Image (cartoon, rainbow, N blue to C red; front, side, top):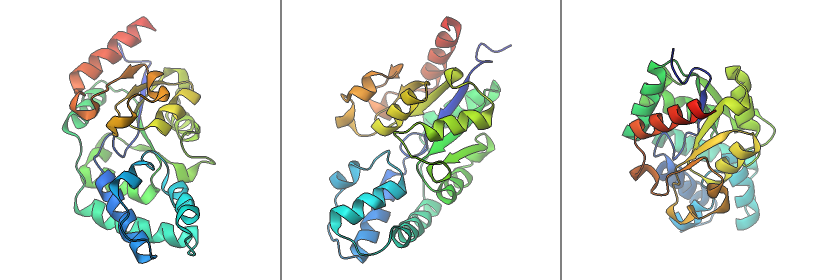
Length: 231
């Protein structure tokens, strides 16, 4: 019997399992350029890391005075993103190893993401992570995106797990806040280094301030095993 038998793990996707933010940035830059907003910078993009695509676009319309509807902008950005994602999306190697370690022990796993169902499906299929990650929740399927807990609570429901027995793996402030609101422990791996001091990260059960550079599958698995024994 595995020490992790009572545990379920819920992964964020973008910036956590895969380094998709460069593709999201480029999709956003292209979409805004098409609607008269040139020079969208990476620094501007960083403020939207961890926020759903729909909520990002809603903010864009107000911030940049865009006339196009949310649906029109969403279709344009998702179209650009899917083309880029299918061409190239990099899985963090240690994250793939971590997923494989958990799968070998039969730990139930899910993905809960602010991306569209189409984008999540394309990335998981293209990276072959779908072999182990079959339970998927998009923020578009629940009333509220992160930092609300809805995607994580829905993931727990689909896994048949108690939220208290779930551990979330996240890279962004809204996601860590959502995990806390869902009553789940969180392994936080900041994608934006400057956000590592945010109070939301301080509440994480495990904070890897160095981000993906500090993350190893073996150490994360050992931490889960220790925390499961202590529970």
